[in-house]
Image (tube, rainbow, N blue to C red):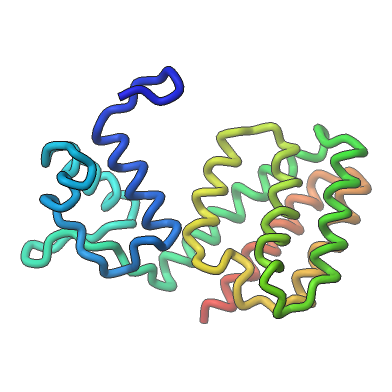
Length: 206
């Protein structure tokens, strides 16, 4: 099949759709992934399904058992911690790349989003989305589509977002530090603040 002029194999298609369903929590941990059902659902043979399940198992999204077959993996705290460590590296890189590329208008939009996050009550259902917009408005300034793709995939691995469990006041304080570093165009400090901000989330897993 073709997607936007590019050929996509059946196994790629099945892999992409299943990955999206799992990372968006539309398929819950422990859900059986029966080859026959999936082949019928995607209107493909067993071969692309088997290949997709092997790929997703390598990514840690699926587990296979001789007796039970394939199921959606449970995300343990160790896996979550590893995801935070990877995210810290990617976001720090994106932040440092963004410093030299962002315009004054970019910075003004990031500051406006910061103000909206800061003014949002901790129990407001809009907070998670506003927080995501704040972070990704900055990372978009890195002008790196691949970095954005990887970070969006990682963010989806956190059911309530990477900021879940962190006190709102702490996030606002760290966001303010990040803004000051951005205003000074201090690339190293921007990367350091982002890295500490992401890694700080690990303590709330325990």
